[in-house]
Figure 1 (tube, rainbow, N blue to C red):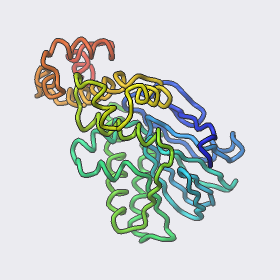
Figure 2 (figure 1 turned 45 degrees about the vertical axis):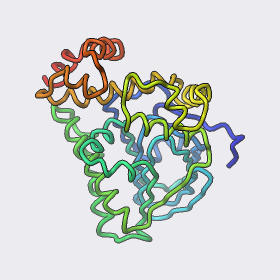
Figure 3 (figure 1 turned 135 degrees about the horizontal axis):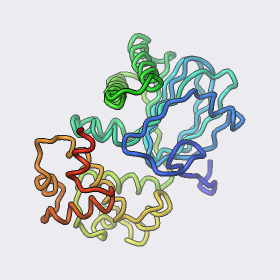
Length: 296
């Protein structure tokens, strides 16, 4: 691949755009989508989605950044946001795609911070190169997740999905240190810079840190940072920072024992009223109403 090739960012699934909800989860058979595109998925990336490709049988050529792989049989591929990927599937491919928002991963990393570095890179697990027992357990978890997704919706449906996504990610990471793991380095500098910017924002979350400081940490100009964010996410750096703050606030609000003012202070706000105004502007309701609505 060449940097001259237009690489598209899809907010939703392949060829789909639109906002991704906080707890977005979608499951479908690979062949359902692939057949519509002649079994070929052009290189692209998702800035807001994690994906797990779960294949029972068949063959596929996988493109990750500037590298190409061919897998056959039973395999699993984990792809985090901002990783350029594409596929060329055989027509007999049999498997599922699990797509989910960063919300699931963020809540997991908040509990187990050491997982962050493992979930920022693609992982490829094949029965041809790994212990079958461990992979079979992972496949069972993912198949159970698929069954829950397609089952009748209940009040606990989202919770069950959340738990199973966490199980799948934990099992994937558990296999990673000892088994063959794909580590594909992106050669597209703007994507790398954007990923680093996101990591800095998550690590040093603050509503008042000057944007110039982020640019300095990346060794680029503020105008360059602004251009990268708009090209990849169609948003300004400030909007991306505020989005991360709101996402973190939503997670903290799920603990009803934590005072809203304390949440504001923990997110770097000196004045809780400013936090409340920002939250209402971005979410359409106050933190108090949001909490009551989601804990009802």
